[in-house]
Length: 82
Image 1 (cartoon, helix red, strand yellow):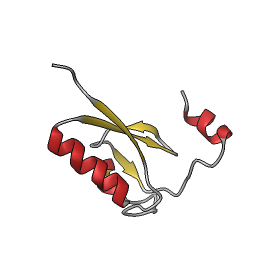
Image 2: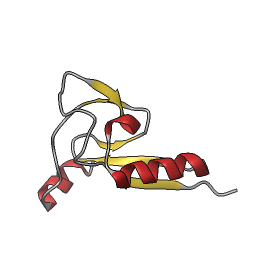
Image 3: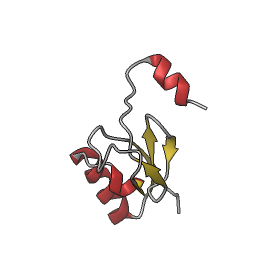
């Protein structure tokens, strides 16, 4: 059986944007699109990762600090590419 990996984006709307508060990635992002992708992946038992403007690739259970960073330019994308 083939495994499926879904790659989705982070969202500007977050649980918190305060760096002193930490939460799992799957609880941090709050946009409707993110929640829809997360719920679908969990229902279908698909693996998924999230492209974060600050942290690069994240797994759903990774714990991160709140932040307020967005990808606006090609330079921003190049910064997280590694």
